[in-house]
Image (cartoon, rainbow, N blue to C red; front, side, top):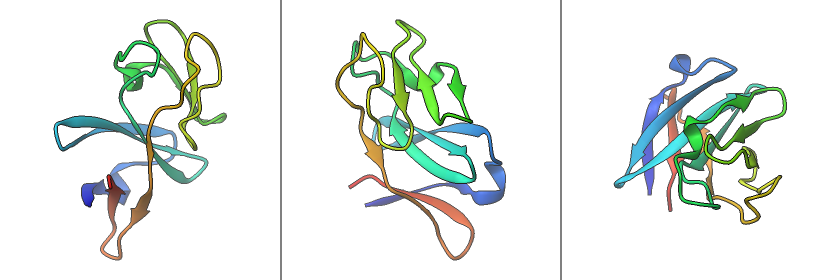
Length: 104
């Protein structure tokens, strides 16, 4: 199932938006011109991951609670205290310019 996130021109490179999806929240990021979507839940303690600082150059987000870093491209945990990945979702730009996220 795909959800419409927002028009492509509303997400410039180096920006992020939170998107509601079936009662959950997904972080939608654009870094290096590419689009990435991950769940807004740290695998360490279920905190709001996407409220943390993120590095557009490295394509990584840092959990605001305990500092675990995650790769936006894959959802992989890069540093402790997290060691499990977070869910990542396929993203594409539809022909009409709308960004859509495949939430399964």
